[in-house]
Image (cartoon, rainbow, N blue to C red; front, side):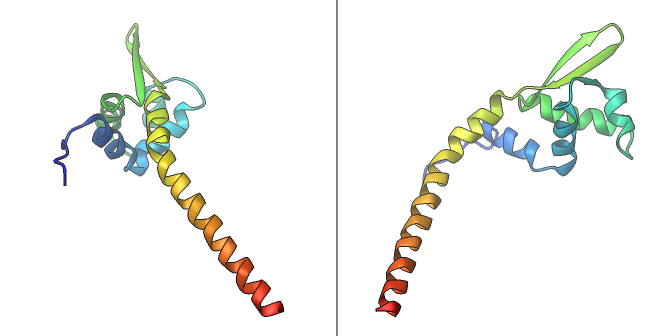
Length: 115
């Protein structure tokens, strides 16, 4: 089995997406960019904790950060999600083929029972 990097971009991406709070932050940012204060107001946690979640999302490439005056605005960057989709495509094809094969078997069983 090949050795895998423990801190590859894919590992950081899936690590970021594994946390439900970070997924909720991404959902919020789909509506548009927001400041840390806007995001923190949505959660029952200290602002430094929200900042840590945003750092993980930024480090994984899922959000961008733009400083305007005293505020930092965060927005979704869909690029890494496109990479995940490409990575998942072979698995989707695998399961589609399996379901098609199962449908064929079920059609044959039904035909045998009728006939």
